[in-house]
Every structure is written in C-alpha cells, then in structure tokens.
Length: 116
Image (cartoon, rainbow, N blue to C red; front, side):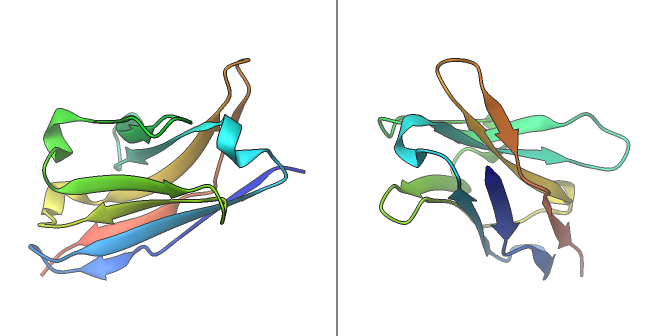
C-alpha cells in the first residue's frame, strides 16, 4: 500500500520560514518524480515545485527564489523549504508522486497559514 505523509505545516508570521516534509512508503521512491502542490480556499490546486527522479527541479514563478525542493532517496523523503512567507502562500500543501508509467499518488496535505 502506497502512502505519502506530509508534515511540517503550521501557523507562521509573514516573512517566516517553514520546512515541509513528505515521507513515502510502499513504492520504489527513486523511480518517481516528486512534487508539491498547494490549494488555497476557493482556488484550484496548483503546482509549486517538482523534482525529477534524476534530481532536476522546477518551480512556479510565484515561488522562485523563496521555495526549495529536495529529495533524499535513501530516506524516501521529499522536502520543501519555504522562506519569506507571504499571506498568499496560505494553503493546504500536498505531496505527489508520479511515475513514468502514469501512476499518481497523493498525500493528505498539510496546512500552511501565514498570518500576523
């Protein structure tokens, strides 16, 4: 059974930082591209950052320079370092695993709230 479990969300003041983590189990992690999405209230889910199985990264324009995605294939984890947080970063953040043969798995999400 495949599981993706996100952690690290919370309430943070504008300008603050957070580190989100996603722990994967039940799959050959190194074969999967990993990504982080977010969904704010009343909005569609959007891609924030992605990292390929080979380690190549890409980011949404809105988060470039503030967010950093990384993966640890030995620990089956993918992390999202978030800095200079803005109120508009408030959302539920989801981890996704995607294989080259079109299999997709999602985590349950972790809430990030940016507010003073």
